[in-house]
Picture 1 (tube, rainbow, N blue to C red):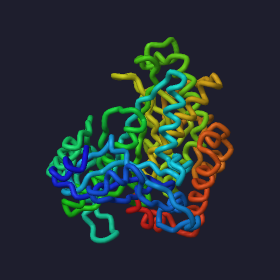
Picture 2: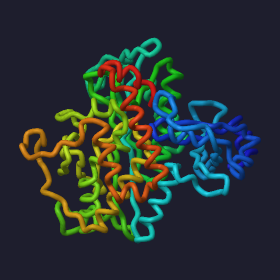
Picture 3: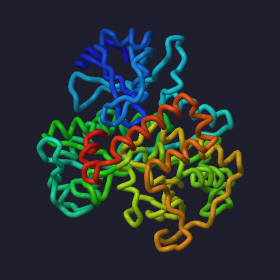
Picture 4: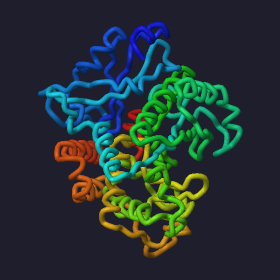
Length: 426
């Protein structure tokens, strides 16, 4: 879409976003008249953003410069923010190479590696958020109806109508929306896309929800924990593996119809879940959410339609895998890249799957719990050769630096204080 068309639609500026290693969406914006220049030359962007922590403290220095370039093939006029359009960005170095610390660039590269093997993936996110009518940083549920209750839909029907309307105008295909379990909580599911578009859509959907929420005089939180002791916000990933137009997660001779490749793909993900938590449940409050018997997927297990297993396999419709242990503090580009690397490594290794679990894993003596604190996940991540080799030393160092800084920052705080510090960061 060229500048003249954008201007004719009343757009004055384009927000170009990237997601940092703490899971926070950052932005640089350009007037429409400067869009062509931004595409060609980029917008100045400090590499220190690689080391931003959720509270905006920085673990790295100010030296250097990157160029943030919008992907205008994904440019979208924002329905809930008049005068604005949005595009995801990729950061380049001064020589025109994709910055090795850029998470979207990483995901593009990982998808390309799959394609070299004749494989592709389809992905989608389930996005949970809580709506508050409280003043300032206080969280006060914006509706009072029961979990999953029609009462909540009635109370906030106009708000949800505007969320759906804005997303439809922006070309986002919503498959369902409903009240969730926690107070003031809702969930929205969007259609499967290629992994890069799926991650782009997560950013777009969340910022659209945020804008509509503000327009209604409310506040939205996507944080993994909004109230200490309560149910948190997940950000589940749905994933399927394809070859030559065929979904490899169905029609095979394996368990639940899995093909051999899909079995190994899931096996690679399952075996690496402790390491993947460092990018899928990457914050200290993530581990207040990741507790047994809360549908958070706190055990290293898989099963058919088992909502307590970290990996829930789904056969209805187009067979796919749901990763339940990820949450709203994750950078979606890092999360999907990590999952695809893990799955691809599983194929290379010929990984096998253990027997599926058909009960709550908490009831079994031999169930393996996932890490219950961020430091253990970081340790597993840095020990996984497949992940750190593909991510590269610069990105691995930045990720671990941010994680360790957050651990230290919050180490002396109570669960309530940790939640209050991070509630509005995501």
